[in-house]
Length: 509
Image 1 (cartoon, rainbow, N blue to C red):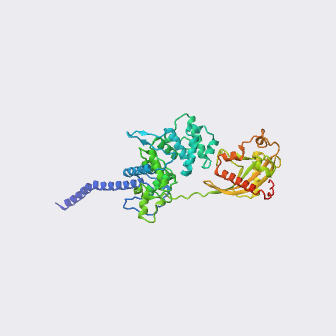
Image 2: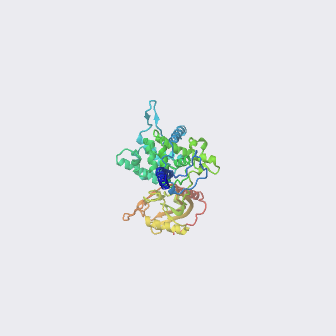
Image 3: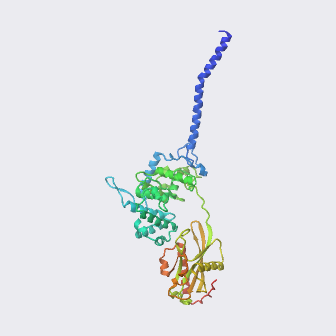
């Protein structure tokens, strides 16, 4: 072969080799790109909870790290594997059957020998009982609720009975439980269901249309009373789930809450949804408590990643889960309350025998403690001295009740009874209490139609004049009842020291 031919052959051979190698290179590039895309996709689809793996080789048992809310969004469909799900269901239900507390609103579905379900109560009555109990249990301890629940069901055993009650009757029954808006929603919901002539709603979507029923209450009623396979998520359930999966996300964040609902939905036992949901709540209430969890007795401790982490690292504790959320600081305000007694006698020494009556005022239908009864009061943003407090009370009595001493009434006595602090969920209120005894001028036979009620006066303020026995029977809030107890004790102490000269009567400001 000539030199030129050899060169041509070499060039031809190199080109042929390149052409043959090109598809393999293209495949390797394609495969590498595909693997990189799979990795990116996998990372994107990983749940963004701070979750520790029990069996993973790269397990890090450090104290939970704070994650930004936007980083907590993820696909959590596979967080509970099938095997874990089955174990958790079986363990919790077995434990619940043996250890559930005996509570008046709690019923379960029993099975006869031939496997047919036998319900202890009719579904609607059961749903009503679950509804009442769940509403009462919001923000209230179980032991406190038991007595209230029993008295409520004795007075209004069915939805139809409750629908015929008045708001005042309901508030009287609710007195002392607090958060009175809950009672109003129960009454409004009962009236709505009965008015529509429909059966008790049995699905979450239908239940959500009833006033005051949110996702949690709807899930509880639907699963416990109607065996709907739906989850419930409350504070107890969040705590159990957070520890099972070692989730260190903010439990109050909206995205996190949604993810907890998805987790709970994965676990619900399809054959016993109501009992399973109650077992989760029971576990959180009795063993998996916020501060002192009893992990030794926990039926799902073998599946608990928080417990696993704590055993592998002394710096980690089960109580690290879920993240502690700092509560908003309570605001301070002040209130001056005047217990106004209308006396039939002008003689101060005869007050105890004068059959005097006390003035009660109904609060507005909206806002804090809506529609409840109280003594005349003025709420302040800042503290005021005695003179200013009395001036504000006098203005209120004159404007709302035409009580204007000495023009149409005389002040028999006006004394400072004391003060105390009452805590609402978001308010710390300092309350000053006084006793103001008045004698109306003119007719003493019909107090309600003298001064306080004039036919030509349009007054939207609702009020009552009641004797002490009637006041004691009223459904008053704990703060109002505290005020009245202070006044009663003050009067008793005064009468027991009747030999002591009476204090000089203060002038009405």
